Image (cartoon, rainbow, N blue to C red; front, side, top):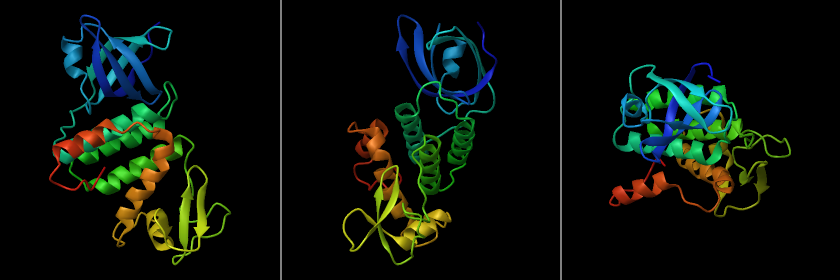
Length: 235
């Protein structure tokens, strides 16, 4: 059975058998793993990350084959920090997004984020916004302006994140605790507030950690290895 045409992006591709490839696609219908025959031909040249595609699939099982794959727009060319940021987003989706779980809004947000990366927009707000949207779409979101008991976050208060639940009040500053004014700045997407971006990076790491498990992110390790003389500020 041939599926209707879907917009898609390649998240990851690897060799499969003699001339085929196993490809993870992000589509509005979710993350799909497909087999691409003759991956060294024209279709294989299109199976690159960050290229908007249109795909038709064949098959009834979970592992479908690509019947048609065509470009659906100009490729987004990413270099340097933007490239590593895009690879980071792809790895998050592969690790966290269940197969064949439709998320059309997440697909649209990914598409817009890749365009913004190609346009060299400031990286950290883009990454934090995508991480937040991913958590929300997977059902792991939490309020930034209220604690887990529904009480408003106070600018001078101290709070600890309980993943997938929300913020609990803390009585003293200690490692892992957040100050209320940083949380309120995040709630308003006010990245000009001093410390808001650093706190958001720390918050997203805490929120994502239980779902990523103990396995480190390859994209983050690769970035650290290649940029060993510089502090990693975005991922």
